[in-house]
Length: 285
Image (cartoon, rainbow, N blue to C red; front, side, top):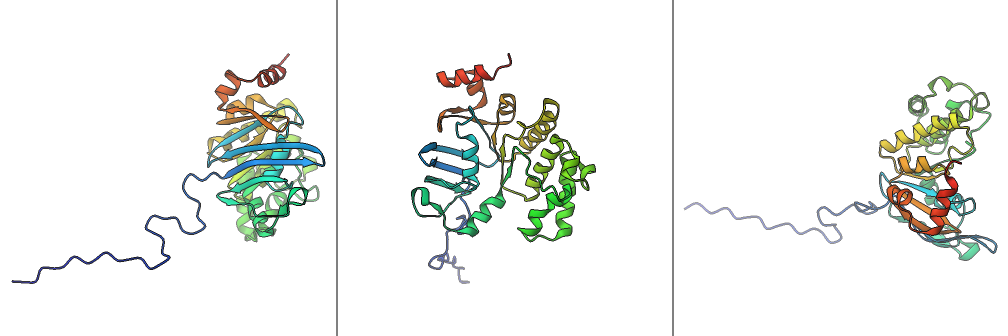
């Protein structure tokens, strides 16, 4: 009789080899938030601006931060991007916690390469545009990918022109910021942020410096980005924008989260007296 073929024994992985289906080392597990801020504290001298704030934004989330002036919204955004140092708490980007040295007011990020990596993946759009006045719009959009990321200039220019078209100012590529309206400058700033191909966008009051007509130009762009599934944190005074684009709204008061939840709950059924008072104050007269 012919020999019966034997079933090969299952192979044993070499020591240290991850099991099948295990993410490679350094790869975030599925569902890991892009931004995860835990118990964050920030003060200027004796003035405590953030008092133990927790914020999470998963892939595709749009989180709106609302609250009165001085509530800590913009400071939180700047701490997230490491433009400001915080004194306590954790900032975790895509599963990678910021490494610190020192404590209290002496605390600083310990790894400059990690800071650069985070900032290139968390592009920030400022209230005051922050475009370089001596560069054309196209040069503004191209500058960081070419000089920071060392990407080929031809490749970056193609992407930059496509992004200027995306935000509706393709015809402004060769003009200087001073020759543009505020709404056009802010759209150029958004194109500049997108050209870094970031994992998330941080908007700090993107429409507050604009008159109502120009404001709508920028709001249309932000809504389109939200519809694409972009991860965004948006500090805004515009409750309609927050309600329309966010899937989670956070109300900050005196450096703490007073209330948070989906827009329907925050704007339709607020629970705390302070949020009710704030929303009444933002209603048109």
